[in-house]
Image 1 (cartoon, one colour):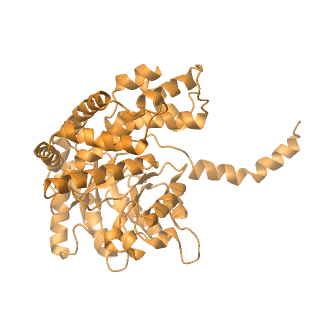
Image 2: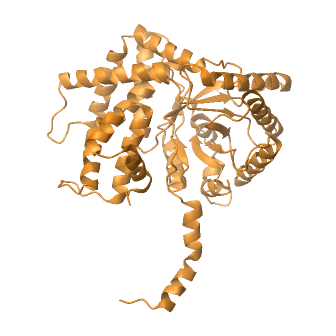
Image 3: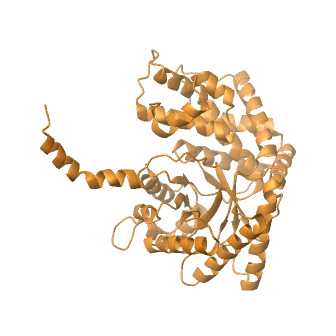
Length: 437
């Protein structure tokens, strides 16, 4: 069928707004790293070497409770039981599990020594509370100085930032003052803002609060001589009003788009959100049905936008008697694996003892499917015979899976490049676009 020029012109005219919407609001994946977790620390308890200290505390706790190899075996065995028998109907042998556990334990130990915290958030909201204006001013200035000094410490995080009080009437002025003081001290102490600075806007209930944050960012940029667009922020989804508005709409999606390109991530707040819906304290958890409903909405909202997504936290900590410690680790590892399987690649950690299972579960997730994903990607790119017929969208997902595993340390560069016969640049392009063209 031949389409007349006039007909095509009419269609182009009709779809002009659609074309612009897709370009502006759904640009696809950003070429930026997403951390596997965010660690929240009260703003009055931070030190420049806090990440290193957390890593050492994590290693000491593991050593005191059977060692990293034993914990790795527990994590792998639990994951295998959950997955069930393989295609041949067999479970892996004890020898296979032992070998996998040995390599996993070695990789996670190195991670805890090298980069125990990927994303550090200095908390001046719930984790800090109301300590009065004078104390908050003093502590936020000190926290900013620690953040600058910490950039040269062993184990410095790739990302660091602040969570300030929300845009609600009672806390709005205090939160913006804290943010201003933090930025002022960063510029003063370091001469510029740190790379990968993250600002967290909590307890968002309306689209207008996001608009207000954009206004605040522009004002702070002008005040501190920063280029427009320098300040970006993540939104914490902790209120039911952001999932379902009073008018019956879902404000979550437009909240991203009124952010003027400044919204970088959505973070689920487990306990505030669950409590707001009346869930009893004993049942407030990352895997509660109300949590899954909210996170499914969040996944829909960020799809195609380049905005990242993070799960929340568990407050069941690996502390106390040995049985309690292992219970806390088992629960944490299962929840980390759960959100990874559901396509959420980041979560919150609240205590040093959660770091071992954060990385064990995460690394195991990427390593267990790494070889198959690499082979499928190789088959797709080089058009090799295969029992699986993959399409560009799946090739993109395979590349992203491998790239995420590489960036966090679960894979080595040699593993990825040798098995896919792709350069890191080619892998990155596939991960963003699904094509090498």
